[in-house]
Amino acid sequence: MTQCITFVSAIMLVASILVDAQESHWEMLFDGKTKTGWHTYLTNQPIEWEVNDGILFTPGGKGDIVTDQDYKNFELELEWMIERGGNSGIFYHVQEDAKYPRIHHTGPEFQIIDDVNYPVLLLENQKTGSCSDVLPPKHLNSNPPGSWNKTTIKVIDGHVEHWLNGIKILDFNMNSRKWKKEVKNSKFKDFDYAKVRGGKIGLQDHGDPVYYKYIRIKNL
Image (cartoon, rainbow, N blue to C red; front, side, top):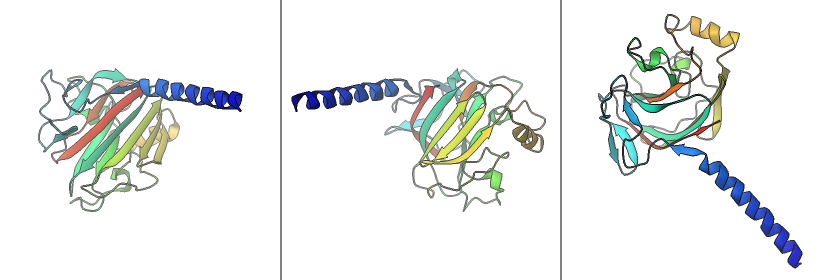
C-alpha cells in the first residue's frame, strides 16, 4: 500500500512539474499595473490608454497600440469587454512602417464588435471573431456588451485559429488558395496584407471605449 501511495504521489509530482513548465512559457504582455511593452503605432511615445484595477482601456480617440516585440508562431490569450455599439480588434503580424499608416494595412484582425447594436449593418465577415472583412466566424459566441469575453488566437506557420469563450469559431491557413482568393476579393487586395509571417500584436482604438485584461502570449 505504501509503495502504491508513493507511486501515485510521484505521478502527481511529475504532472505538477509539467503544468508549471507549461505555465512558465507564458509571457505577460500586460502586467496589470503599467503600460510597459506597448507603444502607440508609428510613434515612440508612451501610450495614452489608461490602466486601472488590472484593466488596460481606452475611452476612444487615444490611438492604436502595438507590442514592442514581434511574434511569429504563438498562442495569445486575453479578455476584453466593449460597451453598447462598440468596435475594436486584436491584430497580429502587424508590420510597423511609415508606409503603412494603419495597423490593418498589414495585420489580420480578430474582430471585436457589438454584433447586435452596431449602428451599421454588418456583413458576416465583420462580426465578432471573424478575420475582419475576410472570413466569417463559424459561430457567434460573444457575450453581450458590458460582459467580459475570452479570446485565444493561435498562429503556427500561417495556420490560424480564433477561439472565443472556449469555442473554436474560425480556422484558416494563410498559405492556402482559398485564403488568397478571399483576400483578393476583400478591401485589402491592394495592401501588403498578411504577407509576412510575423510581426507585432496590436489593439485597436476604433473611437469607442474598450477594455482588456489578462493579456499573455506563448511562443510556439
